[in-house]
Length: 382
Image (cartoon, rainbow, N blue to C red; front, side, top):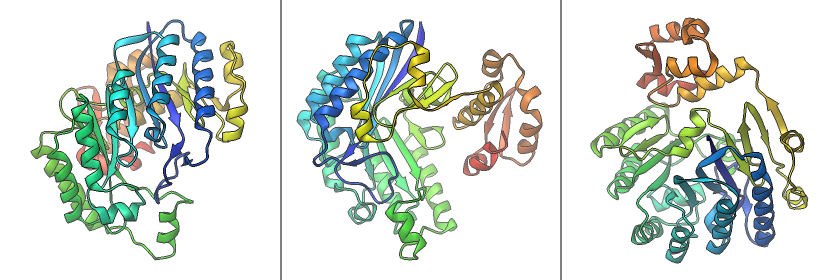
């Protein structure tokens, strides 16, 4: 059996955050029932394309999936199970916002077979949460987290952001410590990226907000390393930390080149070396007539369709693989492409090894700690 990962996009949220450029919009007045019905049609009709696949992970993301009624999420999971072969140990994650998730939803998620939560906290400082445009408080997060534990969730990720306006190394240390003391299984730490069209980008451009200095950002990185080590979290990817055995299997699938199919507005897919995505226009998605199609017909109806040449596949394999702290294995590279890693990229690897940004472990290669800080520079060479 081939492995398949599935992503389901829920574009609704309570309010757009100041840093967010994701395909999402406030849920008030949006036809959620109609959207879920269309999603179910898409999920069902695409299943005929994967008769030899087993689903190893499902990720329900957004937006904020938890703004939907829990019964609608359960309907989507029922549709998945009715139409796809799922492994008994499949990892099934839903993203939730502390401000839109009551305990009864967690109970319904468990009944529906969801076994992993990703809670978007971002900061434990209520003033910083207001700056970020979040709708919840830290106290609401604590209630949300406790409710999830009481309903039996034993695999929880907490999303955090650092290096944003008004944040300091001291406030970051307080946030991270408050989260780690709760003993989640996984923590994601994302450095703020200014994205065009977001309120943050406009405010910084006008000089009304400023980002932390390089020195302050470096101090935050030092805090992260210190506390993650102290609380025995392992860094397994540039932005992700986990207790042993609790790495996010779905995201590791992305980084190691597994096939994945996306359902919903604007969702992306990568199957058999071909990349494509759904329409990003909500009204167009609702009008789409999903029927059983051949693979060629299915892909023809998608947007941004690109079949990657072999060299581009190798490049992506390196870029994604180097995000993982274990790096890229030469045997994995040979199995995938039938070529020796050094024959293709030896010069680049040697150059950045000499600069202390890459290091070899036998014939394998990975980023050094300094290399992770300058990962974009290294990866641009492949």
